[in-house]
Image (tube, rainbow, N blue to C red; front, side, top):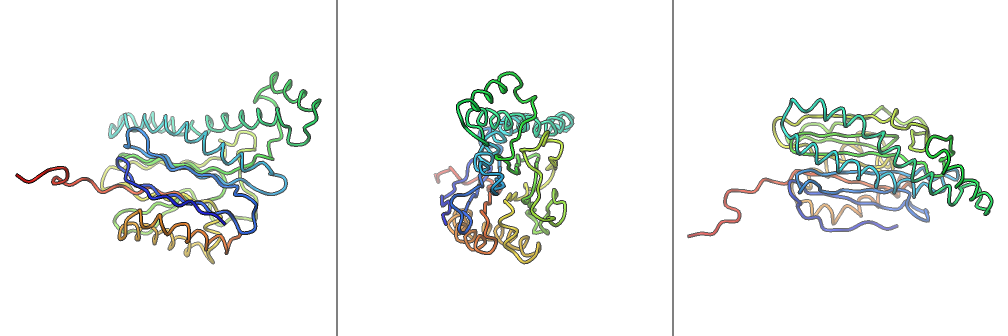
Length: 302
């Protein structure tokens, strides 16, 4: 079992947290994640993806990595525009329209990467003749064809956060948790209720953007909420959903009391214990609004 251990530093408006632990008895993790400041530190992009990992999805670690990379590339462009728009409410409808189109852009980019990989190394056989046939078909049909991409299947959760707005997207299982600064109850705006078995929506399906859920929240008063994204290996480690929400609230409370750097040091151990219960890869990323600089900071006494 391995964990990501890094000491975060405030970047612009944000402090970021991220950790990932391989599931017990797994050869390698099928999860991927990113927590990245952008737009000069005035926005942050978060993403987690969970490759399905079963025998039918034996390349899903690649699918999860590509999901995070392609979402991050698209979300950074969106984040720059969100920062440019800022508090100009008249421009928000156009920005929301762009937010609704982002999953389609990500889906097309992900499908193209999976198709290109499969054309060069077919998942269901890699003889020279099969590779040549797959490459020829890809050159002719591209993403328009009907392709079996189950080997690369992955979920995807992402968020873009600025001081003026929050956008979240979710395809498949996992959790988006928002916790306001006033100590209110944690919210899961994209939750669809308890999971039903092991089936989940996936990027490997045709037109996965049609199943992607989107949440928009303008931030017109008070600091931005804490945003936590996690793969379902974390929530599955608790006896009930309230236990998971209590954990999320505890992460935020400890970050406020001890600092994000102290929480980052402990996060690998927390996720490791969770992975022992769920048996699954366990990944968490989070963004906290950095405390505004005081008037005295950067000044010297006369």
